[in-house]
Length: 172
Image 1: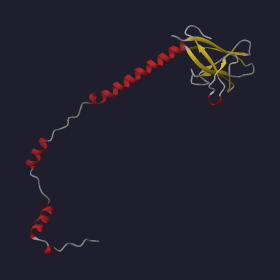
Image 2 (image 1 turned 30 degrees about the vertical axis):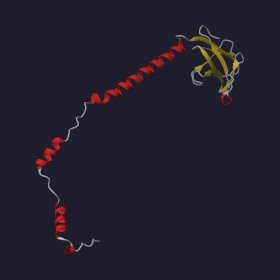
Image 3 (image 1 turned 90 degrees about the vertical axis):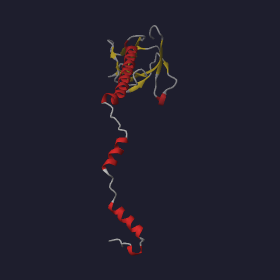
Image 4 (image 1 turned 180 degrees about the vertical axis):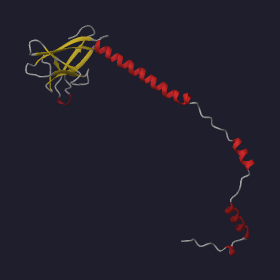
């Protein structure tokens, strides 16, 4: 469908000339274009080292902090200012027992226990930093409290748990 063309006979002459010039388009002389572009400041591209240096520095700082935190945590779990604490539970019929608590993010695979020579008692020695620790025993998948330890008050979500307080020098 074509648009109807306006009747140019009724259009004033000045307007007809303006329309003709607009249809032709204006040509900017090359000298003007060069002069204008010379006045526009050019943005220099920074070298790659300058662009990526802040990211590399931030990554190095994060890595260093992570390594320091990890080393501090492992030292507190293995030695350093930690105390060796022996955990034991009598479970003669159990096939598998592990220690879980706030010190190992309640992971049943983190601290497996060994059956003693009597065949009824399971034990494990763990290095814990000073402070209060909530724990339980995972006996064949079921959580059991320590009958020789105080019961934790906060029993989150109805999970039975015990509490131990580790002093700065010595264990339980």
